[in-house]
Amino acid sequence: MGFLSAEEKGLVNGLWGKVNVDEVGGEALGRLLVVYPWTQRFFQSFGDLSSADAIMSNSKVKAHGKKVLNSFSDGLKNIDDLKGAFAKLSELHCDKLHVDPENFRLLGNVLVCVLAHHFGHDFNPQVQAAFQKVVAGVANALAHKYH
Amino acid sequence: MLSAQERAHVAQVWDLIAGHEAAFGAELLLRLFTVYPSTKIYFKHLGVCPDEAQLLTHGQRLLEAVGVAVQHTDHLRAALSPLADLHAQVLRVDPANFPLLIQCFHVMLASHLQGEFTVQMQAAWDKFLTEVAMVLTEKYQ
Image (cartoon, rainbow over all chains, first blue to last red; front, side):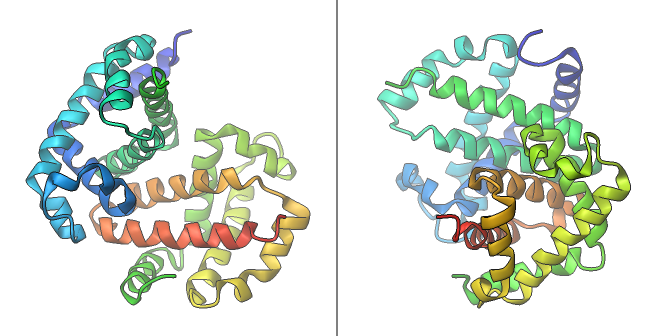
């Protein structure tokens, strides 16, 4: 068995196919910055982050969220080799961006909340479990090259 | 410490839960056990596979305690002191587990309430539950 069971892969791909990756990206990043305000430390150049409304409507937040989630989505295509898929990005986040890997876990959790928000009752415990596994896997992959 | 605005958001969240403590509590526990199976070790008394009745009973107890905390955001330590004693002396739930429960709480609220569970409400609710967890584990050492 790979990283996910066949059933979990089915649940993840089934739901992910219905996700508007661009929109969900912006929402997830925005939520991260509102719910865990210390994460704003990485986005000093993003302009107005002074309130929840400002953050959620900030165009740089939306653009960056879109970029981040498209990366995540690409990574999902290599679900059985997340470390390989995210190796370059891991180096970037360590060497250039200096992002504490704890932030990957926080963003992963927020992403799961946003999916629950969008899919309502369809986001049942089994679906949540599969996605939490995925986001944990991606977070670990992004932390893997840290030194 | 919660600001007045944050306390208002916490009250808003509670308004959506009150009256449905058993149902929400049961789902919270089900999500916790499904997503983070290691948390089941703290609930051995519910058996290997807790049934719906057990989840409803225990879930209700859990959420009623959250309700007490909501009514006493200004004096959490005093209001939760007996529960803090229980967690320190009897239950001894490793503090690392509380963020797992909190995550499941957010996901549950988001899936049930969707648009009604705003980002401001999530921020305040997270801060509040984190404070509750801190109070419950304060007497551990």
